[in-house]
Structure formats: structure tokens, C-alpha cells
Image (cartoon, rainbow, N blue to C red; front, side):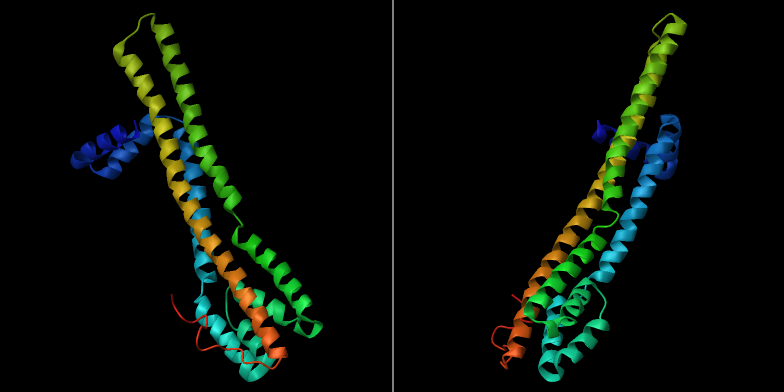
Length: 238
């Protein structure tokens, strides 16, 4: 059904213009097209906000780890804390939280990293609940519009006392347009949601992996060992 509607839109778009066809179909869909549109706009707004936030949180993790290790080796914990304070992103914040508790021991640093890591994870995932809500609501609004449209079509048939093909076809078309709109809105938002989740999962994985590297570096610093291993450092790309 969705492919047939898309084909009709493309065929009509060649003569009338794609935007004009969209507006025409929107008007033909009736009142329930507006709630679907609102759900799509709000969902896209949340998606764009998350994309901006996640892109700002994304840094070159491997390079940052090497810089922190160099700072630890050359200037100790104070130099590493200063570097983390000057770097944006959740990984730098988690590193700083751990380095702030190094004087209390390795276990305290690990607890600080774990606690602040949970805070950063919740910050990265903020808004996704609302995005998933609009993903669920948009198709439901479309289906509701379809049901209401079908009821109105049968009411028109009852009042006319006869089944007119044009009357039935017009009512069914109006009803199905809301379903198509709801499904399209849900698909668009679902793609955006999955993209955000994949990006968050990657950031969390990098955060956990780099935190282990930081703890190992702190242990090496306390034991007076060489922190940076040039033979297999984190800066090497696989």
C-alpha cells in the first residue's frame, strides 16, 4: 500500500510539483492529518536536538587517551585533570571525575568513574523516551483517523440510502491517507531513533573501554612504570 501511494505521489509530482501534491493529499486526509503532522514535527525536533548534542559529545577518543597518558606521564594527575577540563564530551568528564579521586585510592577513582559514567549515560539518552513515544503515537493517530474516516463514510452511505462508488471511494481514500501519513511519520522517526541509539551505544562503549585504560594508566603511574606503550598504544588504528 505504501509503495502504491509513493508511486501515485511521484506520478502526480511530475505534473503538479511534489510539494503541491503533498499539500493536496494532506488536505484530503482530513482533520487527523494535523495531529500526525504535530507528532512528526515534535519527533524531528527531538531528533535534531539529540544529533547536535551527540555530535558535540563525540571526540577522537584514541587521540584523547594518548594525550591524557602523556599528561599523566609528564605532569602527573594535575596536568591530566587540566587537560580533561579543557576537553568537551562525556569521556573527558568521566576521566576528570576519576582523576579527582585518585588521592583517595584506585577503588575511589573507579567508583567516581562508574558513578559519573551513569550520569553521562542518562544525559546522552535524554529525550529518547519522548522520541519513542512519538514513534508509537504517529501510526496510532493515523489508524484512528482511518477508523473515524470509515465511520463517516458509512454514515454518508446511510444518509444517502444508496452505495455510490464515488461516495465510498472518497471516504475510503480519506481514511487511508491518514494511515499512510501515520506510517510514514513513524518510519521517519524510527530511522532517526535507531541512528541516535547506535551513536549512543558507540559513545558508551568508548567510554567504558577508555575508562579501563585510564585506571591502568593510573596504576602504572603509582607504581612508577611507563604509562605509554609505543608497541601497542590506543592511538594505533586497527
